[in-house]
Image (cartoon, rainbow, N blue to C red; front, top):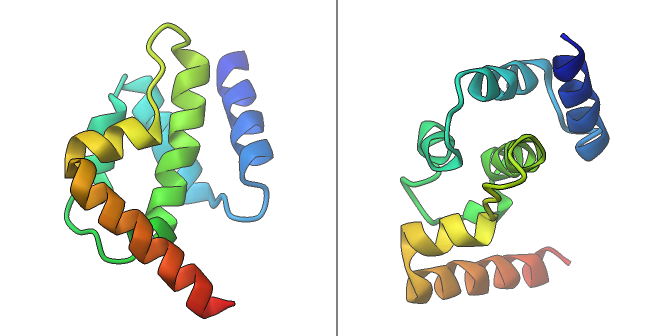
Length: 108
């Protein structure tokens, strides 16, 4: 129980304005069932498309899970960049980043 409270505190500290109760419950369920980050990436269907991936609220939710996962598993650290590179490959990831930067410029 104490670990769950610490995990909740960490999640709230990482995302104080955007963490929603259903997302937190989902993250805690993933931790309890020892889901690997790549499995969660697929559960959130982030592997399905590249369009606006960097602006996706689901990607932010996933990144929040990664932070909690890495804290719980310090010897099995996983990075968002590593997952994206493995999923999309170097060239496609460069295109995704370029598109995200371009969208950011147009929004400002």
